[in-house]
Length: 145
Image 1: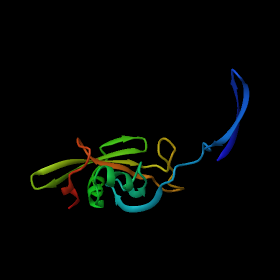
Image 2 (image 1 turned 30 degrees about the vertical axis):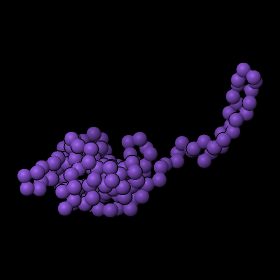
Image 3 (image 1 turned 90 degrees about the horizontal axis):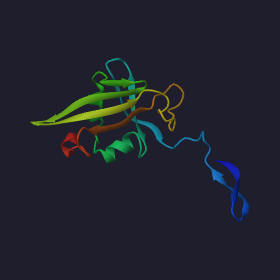
């Protein structure tokens, strides 16, 4: 952390205020360890990293109730449905008898996230940012069976 000082001018006069200010180049902590990995039809090797509460396995396994790698891997086994730079979107369908749910997997196929907050390291990709069931807050429990 860098220590920055600033002079604050008030009606009563000037005062020196000092305190820790986060370094602009500092990045958020996230677990880069790979939980699962899938190669898409175009040969992209896409990791699903443990991440944290904002991205990766730790984000979507709790928030969106996807608790099996095979759910994510099934969507990644298909072609990219939407592409915007390093952001890739894959769509899949989970089926259990007559029940269907559409799965969306968002991937950052780049070293850094678009906002620059996360860095996978030289020669590595961020991978799966999130996965969710379209149209619902949480995926049904049956997709994890």
